Every structure is written in structure tokens, then in C-alpha cells.
Image 1 (cartoon, rainbow, N blue to C red):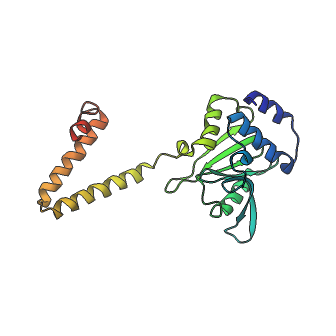
Image 2 (image 1 turned 135 degrees about the horizontal axis):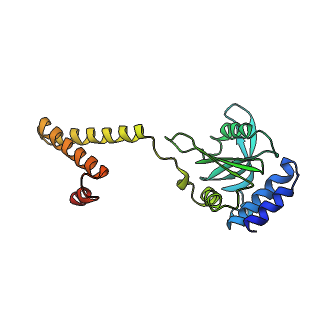
Length: 213
């Protein structure tokens, strides 16, 4: 099935959620060249429809589709509330082993919510009208084959905190080897400045990191 065929089929369809969900997902698998759940995992242990999931709020439910280490996926009928579907997946998240992506769809829209540890959630949406575009195909291929491609960039403050922590660890290690604290501080100041200078173009690109290597 090619993207145009999928779009044409589901633009005409007027089915209820339970009538449409699994067939729509199978069509996505065929369009993307990805094995269906039964083809990839005949025992339904890592990739399946109707994955049983205990709710963090209490009780049990069923995620419409689950692929271990990739996504949980919840369907709603056309024009239904995808925010409700997302809340449902959040309630299943722990039972689904906290997959990196939480996907909701009402056939006309597919919303991909990221769920990576230590990153702020991000959402990307594919509509039926733009599903055949190269950007949408790349997004969906990442969902099915390589979720890491959708990991949000770490916030600037998080990167700064990590860098400061690492410099502090190096300073502690230098003092532990008997280096005078003032000499260690001056040395690290120069290292940080050289990295900054290379990053903003005051030094030729790569010259400092090459020297370190």
C-alpha cells in the first residue's frame, strides 16, 4: 500500500473506533514496510494489539497497540478527543514499560508524544491530508523503526548543569592528585574558554578538540 492509497481509503471510511483501529494500523505497517504485530511477534509478547495494562489510577485496561521499547498507541473514533486518549496512555504508561513514544490517533490525525526520561514532552502531528508528505513519512518511520530520532534536544539549562557538574568533577579529581586548587581553576578556565572560542568561531573549527585528541 502506498501513501496515496492509504489516504484515499481512510478519507472515505466512516467507521466506529473499534471497526477502524486495527485495520488502520495494519495499513500503516504495510505502507511503511514494517511487519504487522502477528508477523513480527506471533506470541504477542513484544508487539501486539490489545495489550493488557494496569492503570496507575487503579483497575485494568487495554492499550490498542503496543511495541516494546517503541510506543503505546491509542485510537479514538473520528473527531473524538485525542487529549482523552493521551491521558489514557499516561495511565497505562508504567504497565507498558514507559515506552519512549505515546501515540494517539482518530484516523484523521496521528499525534506522536515523546516520553523520554529527563526531557520535556514534545508532540508532532500528522493529519490525513499531509500523511503522504516526505516529512510525515519520515516521522512515522521513526515511530516504527527508530524512536531515538524523535528524542527532544536537552534543554539549555540541563546541558549547562551537566557541563558544570563535569567541570566540578574534574577539579575535584585534580585536587585529589595534589594539584594546587588555584592552578587547577586557571587550567579549567582556559579549557572552558577554548571550547567556547571554538564553538563561536574565534578559533578555527575543530582545532582545539583535535589538539585534545
